[in-house]
Image (cartoon, rainbow, N blue to C red; front, side, top):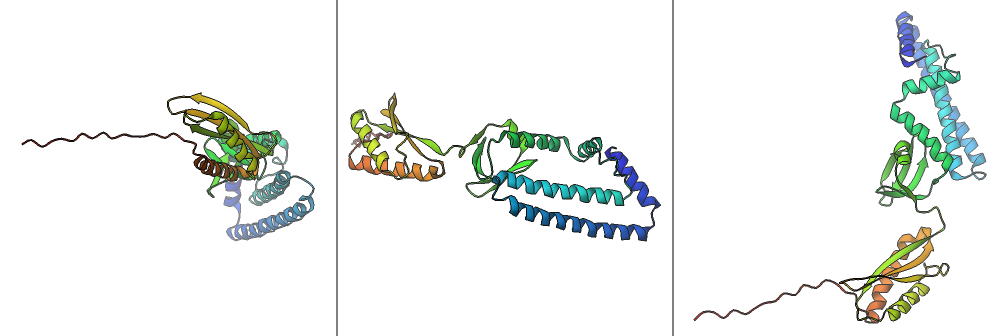
Amino acid sequence: MDFESIVNQISQHIKTSDPIELLIRLISSLITVLMIMVLFNLIQLIIGKIVKDKISEQRHFMIKKGIKYTGFVMALLFVLRTMGVDTTVLTGAAGIVGIVVGFAAQTTVSSFISGFFLLSEKHFRVGDSIKVDTILGVVVSVDLLAVKIRTFDNLYVRIPNETLIKSNLICLSRFAIRRLDLVVTVAYSEDLERVRELLLDIAQKDNFVLDNPPPLFRLDKLDHRGATIIFNVWFESQYVLETQTSMLMTIKKRFAEEHIELPYQRIALLTESIKPEV
């Protein structure tokens, strides 16, 4: 059974039915649909509370969504049966696939299938911080059609699963600890061993920096600006902004106290005095 066949059956039923009887059926169907949705919302709430502490947050979320979608499908089948559509064909596997294809656009079906791949591969879960291309934020929900993200500036972003599965995705909170790469450039006149000891001391005293793995000091390059150093420190993933801010502020303060020169671009203006003509 395809979409056109369903429309034809509904049209034929409307033409052959008494208007008053049809109106009564529609009102009765609306009330029944509301009762079905309320019932399934109640089931969703009860089962959600039962399994909440026994499974992961993502699986708990998907169970609730599955119950909701089941209620929607049952309500849809009831409405179709009321409108004179033979729903016995739709209960079979072939009938269900046919109605999905008939009602859904190609992109929606693709996102639906992509959602199963995302759920099975378990790249991330609700509450993780992820980066998709230029979008950075926290996962709010993982649905069969799209993933919802709340960015760090409190914007709501919906990414279709079809787009997500084709994009470069970075899960920032997948592992418990992360590394912060601090780039510091000092003048050639500075003693690099002294700079190294100072950076290690700063890292040791910082509340967010971990002792294991230990910080790493490495000289990256020598160019016209000076000696560029990359200083790597490790921290707990949830403290990325705190660690970066704390380290940069302390480095700026300690370098000033120890009179370590941070090179910056200088512009020299040369003026020449001009004697007025007599």
